Length: 111
Length: 111
Image (cartoon, rainbow over all chains, first blue to last red):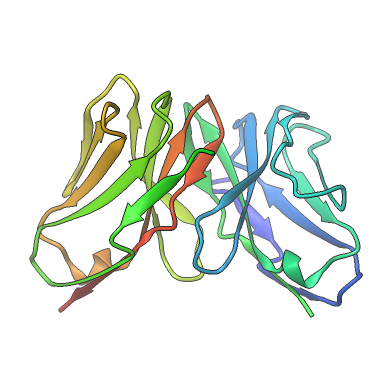
């Protein structure tokens, strides 16, 4: 597609529930990234995919967070047993030549 | 721990002024530095990417400089316009893919 698409744009879930956030990168971009942005802060790195594999998942905060990219295109960030502290905007980006293109993000609110 | 600091946190200027946003980073082994713009409720738009071998990049009314020895970058905006109002984030990459972001400068240009 023309840009990075993230769905849903907003997600409200109850504490303890499971959520999935989807990212559809720019066609042909092999690199894909997930970042998390809390209010008033800059984005924080979560995970980086090169193709289908997670090349670096060092930013995932704990084992409740998991991400996949089975066919090297669309990626899904999965959060189990959500906690109120998981509330943030989750941003996805893809890149070619180092220059990032970000999606508009998914605003996750855990109540 | 690598850190990126942006000063000022907020800035309000009248239309037409030239202005400078500052970014400092602690990691001297910088790979590249990007400046982003973020509009409320939106993702990030890459404005300028400076490789470690470069000293500056220009795009239209924007000019970004990089001084690795002092750990600083500046974003210069000429002849500011109300449409420039946004949050500006700088981000440092120490490797080929992972960025550390500052907390941003919220700019408001008054008509």
